[in-house]
Amino acid sequence: MSLLQCRVDGIGLLGPGLPGWEASLACLAGRASWARGEISAPPPGLLPPTERRRTGLPVRLALAVAAEATAAEPDRAGLETVFASGNGDGAIVGGILEALHDPAGIAISPTAFHNSVHNAPSGYWHIAVGSTAPSVSLGGHDGSFAAGLLVAATAVATRRRPVLFCAYDVPMAPPLDRVRPTGCAFAAALLLRPMGAAGNLLALRYVAAPAEATPAADALDLLAAENPAARALPLLRALAIRREAALQLPLDESAHLALELAPC
Image 1 (tube, helix red, strand yellow):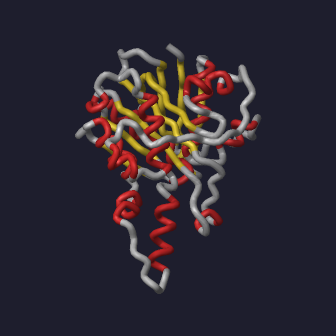
Image 2: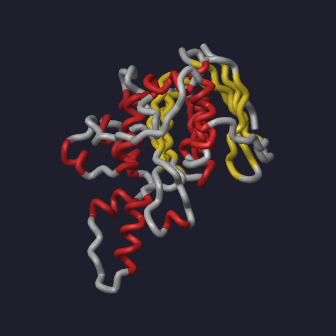
C-alpha cells in the first residue's frame, strides 16, 4: 500500500485519569505521574434535550471527545466522520439479548433498539452539529482504532477534505464480559486535515505482517491493552511529547499500521 499522509489538528481524549487532551498532556508526556481515576462523561450539550436524554455512555464518550477535537473548527457540519468501536454498546446489546431470552417476553425499549446499532454515536453527532456529510462506522475487534485511522486517513488523502475520526469503547455487561473483557471506558478523537494545512504530520502505511511485540513499559502501556480505543495511547503520547516517532498499531494477527509522526 502506498504511503498516506495527513495532518493531525484537533485532539480529544477521555479515559481513566485522563480527563481531556489539554488536562492530560503532562502525564502523557511523562512530566507527571498517571493515576487511574473515574471517568466523567456528561450528557452532550450539543444535542437537543430530547436526544440528550436518550444517550448512553458510549455516545456520551464519543461526543465528548469529538467536541473537544473540533472545538476550534468553524464548520463542524461540513466534516466527514469515521467512528470506530470494537464493542459497540455492550450494555444495550446485553439487555436486548436478556429480553429475547426471557420466557416472559420482556418488552424492548425503542430507545434501546436504536442505541444498539453500531452507528448510533455517529448519528447523534451528525444530529448535534446538523451535518449531512458522509460518515463511516466500523468495528475491528482489538484493531478498531488502527482500522478507523486507516479509513479516515484514506478519506483525507482521497478527497483532500478534513475528517473527524473518533474511537470509543466501554466494558461489556455480564455475561458478555467473561468472553470479551474490557477493563475500562476510553475514547479518543482526531481531527485530520489534508497536507498543506496546519498540524502534526502523520504518515501511515498498511503492512501485511504482524506488529512487533513490545512489552509494557509503564502503567499507561498496560491501560492501552485494556480497551480497543485505548490502543490510541502510543500515538497520543507521541503527540504529547512533540517529537518524531515511528509506531506500529496492530490491525489483527497478520497485519499492522505503520505510523510516522513529525511535530509541526
